[in-house]
Image (cartoon, rainbow, N blue to C red; front, side, top):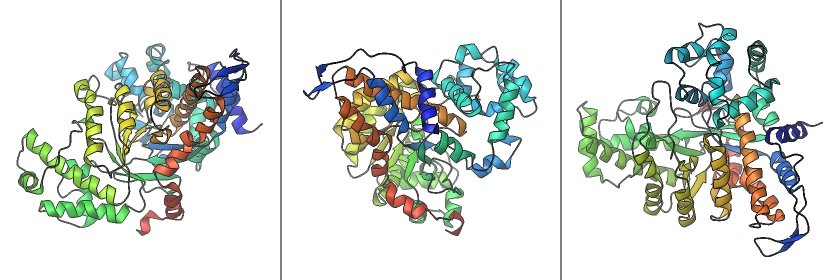
Amino acid sequence: MSNKSVKRRDFFRYVGIGTVGIGLSGAVPTGSGIQEKKPGNLRKTITEKVFSTPLIDTHEHLIDEKDRLGNRTLIGTKSNDWTYLFSHYLDSDMLSAGMPADDYKRFFSADVDPIKKWKILEPVWPKVKHTGYAQAVRISIKELYGIEELSEESIPRLQKAYQEMVAPGFYKKILQEKGNIESCQVNSYPILKSEMPDFLMSDLWADSLMTYVGNNDYAKAANIDPKTLKDWHRVIEWWFEKYGKYVVAIKIGQAYSRGINFDRIPYEEAEPVYNQVIQGKQVTPEEKKKLEDHLFWHVVGQATKWDLPVKMHLGYHAQWAGKTNQMDLAMVRNNPADAGRLCDESKDTRFIFFHISYPYYEEMLAVAKQFANATIDMCWAWIINPVAAKDFLKKFIVTVPCNKILIFGGDYTPVEPVLGHSIIARNGIALALSELVEENHISLNEAMTLVDPLLNGNAREIFRLEKKQKVLKNLNWNTL
């Protein structure tokens, strides 16, 4: 039996729809007014199509495989053992559920025996195991290591299997062979110079070009001493001239720290603020915003010149250790209105708005419907709230032209949970399409026709992937 057949079989076990009769037969009206006979197993038909179709992953934070292989003790600040699977997103739910800070530190510490860490997790596990964050990890553990449930008995097997999995080629084994993922786009500081450049394609992380001006890594790479604002413009332009041909997009995450209400500030107003910053002088929040706004539009102008989409974080804020219980929902709530204004302000710029701006996703349907240069990326959304993501997709299909959505990005640093996240996403896509057929909004044939564009066709077109992959195929970043 092929890997894809196994995945479909296992999928039905996860979602419980493999043997459920839909009870739809005979000719019934569809949304297009065409009479169509719907088979009783239409959910199975759609699900098999969704799971057999290659998926393009448009947003990750993966470190390169060689870096995962290079340290057997630590990955960043977290221990390189089975707990690393819990280190991105699920750790936030653990803290939110009440895990003490000392337990959190010990759970991810390399100084604690990995086998003994179950006792640290055990009290909080029943409280978090049903969230989307946890489901992605649980499904990955089942798919990769064959372990159904976490327990004191299964942890030694999990630790052994985790260590055995981390070997040369394990990224493609997890993503391509297990996940049927064709390629990934990675946001890493400042770019990811991967040894698999046409598989792990890179964004240009643009935040620091707007928020951390001065003699930093960006300026040093460009060999420019940015004494003036014009010098800093040259730094920005150097990065696009050097890498614009090779990156697939730029990524801006400033919505974590401020609103995305970027005004067009003329050079003359921004220059005095830049001079104060370079001289180490304090500036007011209003002055800081002026400089950031000015630089935002310079960066966006360069992206537009190089035909690079501008990916922008919107919506929910990830939590990190020590930074829980922090999110200005009033600022988050304004994201959709500000997104529409950006689209109106720069009609030639191709904006991609992330995470459906959860929890304010209804408004993003209006933005995508109204503005030709607005695309929505569902990255991260499937594990923030799988039910909301499925409902968003249903509403999107009947509201917005279907070429304006990107369906999946795992948004992970560890590669392993991407697999579980992708299964949750495929589940949601199949359910969304099935429900639209059952509710007579679209026909079964129309649902089947939507699968390829949603899973890979839109991404291929939006990011010009055929052209990019030709450039990246034999690229050695070190020779640039």
